[in-house]
Amino acid sequence: MGLFTLLALSSLMFFASISISSAELQAKVGVCYGQLGNNLPTPSKSVELIQGLNAKRVKIYDANPQILAALKGTDLQVSVMVPNEIITNISSNQNLADQWVKTNVVPFYPETKIRYLLVGNEILSNPPNTTWFNLVPAMRKIRYSVKKFGLKKIKVGTPLAMDVLGSSFPPSSGSFRPDVSDKVVKPLLRFLNQTKSFFFVDVYPYFAWAAQPTNINLDYALMSPTNITYTDPVSGFTYTNLFDQMLDALIFAMEKLGYPNIRLFIAETGWPNAGDVDQIGASIYNAATYNRNVVKKLMAKPNIGSPARPGVVLPAFIFALYNENLKPGPGTERHFGLLYPNGTKVYEIDLSGKTPLSEYKPLPKPTNNEPYKGKIWCVVAEGANQTALAAALSFACGQGNGTCDPIQSGGKCYKPNTLIAHASYAFSSYWAQFRKAGGTCNFNLLAVQTTQDPSHGDCKFPSITL
Ligand SMILES: *[C@@H]1O[C@H](CO)[C@@H](O)[C@H](O)[C@H]1NC(C)=O
Ligand SMILES: *[C@@H]1O[C@H](CO)[C@@H](O)[C@H](O)[C@H]1NC(C)=O
Ligand SMILES: *[C@@H]1O[C@H](CO)[C@@H](O)[C@H](O)[C@H]1NC(C)=O
Ligand SMILES: *[C@@H]1O[C@H](CO)[C@@H](O)[C@H](O)[C@H]1NC(C)=O
Ligand SMILES: *[C@@H]1O[C@H](CO)[C@@H](O)[C@H](O)[C@H]1NC(C)=O
Ligand SMILES: *[C@@H]1O[C@H](CO)[C@@H](O)[C@H](O)[C@H]1NC(C)=O
Ligand SMILES: *[C@@H]1O[C@H](CO)[C@@H](O)[C@H](O)[C@H]1NC(C)=O
Image (cartoon, rainbow, N blue to C red):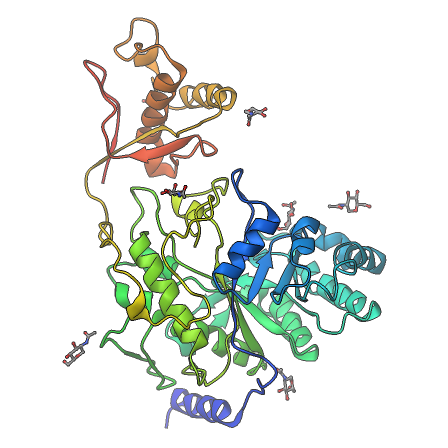
């Protein structure tokens, strides 16, 4: 028997011998209430909408007092975030931790059912910085304050992204990144163990699939029924979807650091309902399919768990409540919502899991499950701020070679001589030169991709071709 087989057997036996007490924890799906939009409903209207989705939990990304007040007296279990920026100061100052809890939590507890304080957001995905090493000390101080103020039902955690793993495939090879494993994750696991808290993790099969759409089957990523299975050659576990694979990679990584049974909490999962032309698989159809499937799995009775932990409860938040128009980054970032900003559902969904999949009305079939092939231009987004647009135009024209020559007086694209027409030309010209080097069609949300050629007459807009 080789060393690998021995290791595999011992890990199998290890898993078999644990049973995670979860009687006190109910399967409940919640929603992430992000507020990066300038067109979102009020907190009290939002709370109604959250209840209308049959969510049982809600996560907010700060400690917004209007939201916490609007949640008073509801049954929603609430997760509140301690901002990244104050982690370092809190980590070395118990008074600051006390102050934060006293100001942001005490006034609302217990009427607002605050249950989780999440310290920072995906801290270990940011560039290396001392905040990494202050994270667990800050969590300990916040936890101490929670105790001090007698807030009995509150646990302390920190949500991390899957990039905290250096290796995740096959799942049995799961291990934490060497730059954080010993110095941050190990103390974190010790803290979570001591305080019986959860490992909060953001799990996005969408991003894993979108990075390798030819290697990973879409239905496997969408958690749709398929006949596709993957058997981990070391653990022998058989997988029927990507989500379970990702969770188990994390479980194996924790086991390697000596903490095999810390409970998981899905801090975020979801699928975008739209995105940029050069992005793949973001559609209402796929978003509805993934989110309905994940809710069905998480709310199933008896609990399903994952191959490494069959039958366990996986508490979760779906990302996100709204499409948020001010989120930076590619178009998908602004389209994870279950709701449009006007409060209408993007597609039918019931987070209680009680609506059978067969009761949902059919949705239009997706058209972008394959990469787009053709030309793309980059033009001014609807409603762009004129002052900011003038600055972006001048920035774009300052980059590259002759980027804006045709919109100079007498040039082929000078007319119409409007800010929007000129900026659209400049954005297309900039992007055509810089996309290969990582340039984006974004300009602080002033630009969007289009497949409609904006050229007119003798004026030809530069494009990229996929
Ligand atoms: C370090 O990271 C924190 C949290 O992510 C951030 O707020 C801060 O600006 C960063 N500091 C530097 C010097 O980059
Ligand atoms: C952290 O503390 C330093 C020193 O007291 C202060 O200058 C700084 O503004 C604080 N940072 C934050 C984000 O509160
Ligand atoms: C799985 O395989 C069975 C038998 O070959 C077939 O009838 C069924 O349609 C397949 N299901 C899916 C979802 O592909
Ligand atoms: C915490 O660690 C102890 C000892 O290593 C272990 O017995 C226990 O199961 C762990 N608890 C959790 C929740 O991980
Ligand atoms: C809400 O917004 C969506 C997306 O913009 C739109 O399609 C829908 O018609 C709007 N619904 C109402 C009731 O205004
Ligand atoms: C437009 O952008 C300018 C400069 O970026 C900013 O100062 C101004 O507040 C913005 N106006 C609106 C209405 O957002
Ligand atoms: C601009 O021209 C110079 C010299 O011909 C060339 O080295 C550079 O790569 C060009 N830049 C772009 C963005 O095309």
